[in-house]
Length: 59
Image (cartoon, rainbow, N blue to C red; front, side, top):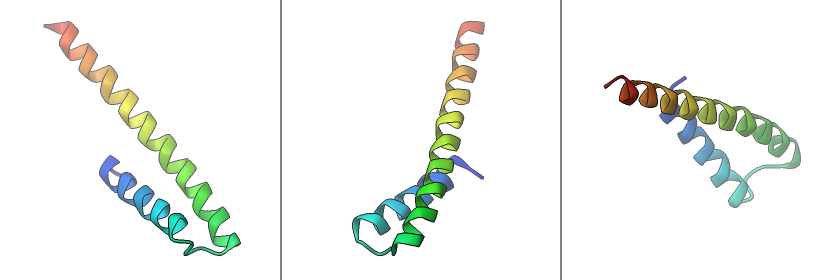
């Protein structure tokens, strides 16, 4: 999965929640999915930040 795809999925989940489009069972499932996506995005950002630091320090 790519970062941009994860963000799009998170935006969809947020929209569904804000618009009350989910019943209670769907809400639970979507929140679990959102948690995984958030973890993925945070990890991706952290790794990218570390790579950037490493590249800048190498110069």
